[in-house]
Length: 79
Image (cartoon, rainbow, N blue to C red; front, side, top):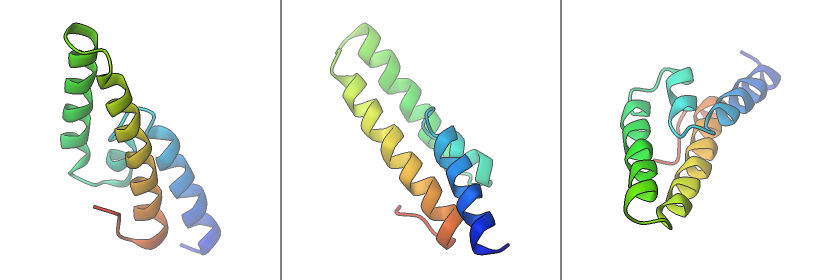
């Protein structure tokens, strides 16, 4: 895979990370399941108990997107 393909693959994975962890699953990373479960827990907590948890989910989604791009581009992520 050349550099341009890696970039496009990384951008696709990062755009899928709007739902935190989905970009990791696209790349074949097993930890994507844990990220999705944690993200869903944050959404439920933000809707039922504590509203500011939405900001935590947004932070998780952004970090997940950057990590997925890094995995696709360099072969290893931030975590």
